[in-house]
Amino acid sequence: MLLLKKVMCRQPSLVGALLAALTVLLTVLVPSLASSQTYPNKPIRLVVPFAPGGVTDVSGRIVASALAKRLNQQVVVENKPGASGNIGAQLVAKAEPDGYTLLLVLDGTLVINPHVYEQIGFDALKDFAPVAKIGNSIIIIVANPGVSVKTLADVVALSKSNGKGLEYGTSGNGSITHVAGELLKQQSGANLVHVPYKGGGPAAADVLAGHIPLAFASASSVTQYIDAGRLIPIAVPSAKRSVVFPNVPTFVESGVNDVELNSWVGVLAPAKTSPAIVEFLNKEINSLLNTDEVKEQLQISGIIASPGTPEAFAAEITKDFNVYGPVTKKAGIKAN
Image 1 (cartoon, rainbow, N blue to C red):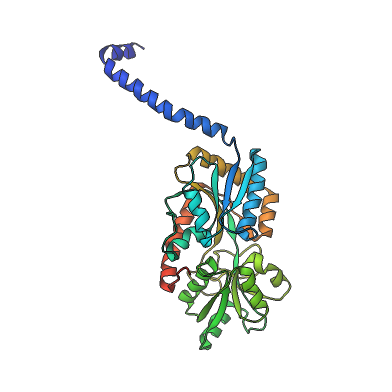
Image 2: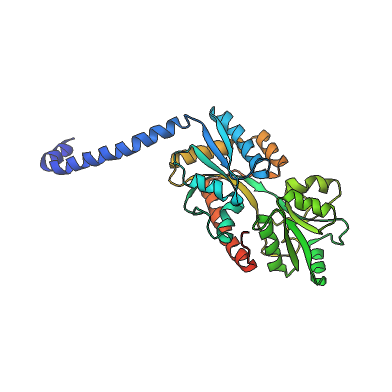
């Protein structure tokens, strides 16, 4: 106290400056702390940048319903489809960073679209604050039983022996399944011909009918047909075997190295959202992802719950962004 009195007596201007700075700091911090402590005090919008009914929409509604119960606050799903998710993502990127407008994002919108569209209306790595990864959406390559292939090595060999190559269907041009197919071609030398569809379901239907021999599709599009023996599971491109298809080998196990990719869904907030709010949401979402009910609901829709930190999610986004860029460029993939 004596020292403080001496400083106040001898350097009143310094003390005044310190008090002024402290006042400014409190003016900035107190409202922020107060808002984070009372958050959320009104409904939260969860923007799904795709039409109702798909994997992204279903996972968004599962999370929204469970999160609303945890927060005792409405979490309203709003579908804003268009341009492979660009329209909805742009809406959230420009929203007020107050934690009341969030984006349910599918990987392709963030890590593929920037490389295949001339303009997307947002910066994938700068305009969002990663909140929480929801999980991995399993993708798999399948074949019609009438095609003489059982393994990925069979697929590669047959494609090379056929001058016209082997056709493979996907959910669309520039989709994660399209990138997976192109990465397989680049790493194995397979002669594969891409056939884009308006969704994984139609692609699987044409393989079932024998119109095309192969498809890259999400688990939700093909699991029932695999279980019934109507489609042959060939391999999954993930780093580890899927819990949904434990007997199906990975690409690496099948002899094709450097092909490890996951399709994922997650939650983003606009950039500059309070770190306290991001941390709060991450904790709440991780808690619900660890419940048996939510894990089971997500797995039925083809997603394996993968709780983690915002930092880990951000690192995965950056990694995939940097991996898929060269692949799409080499393949010449451009949005239609």
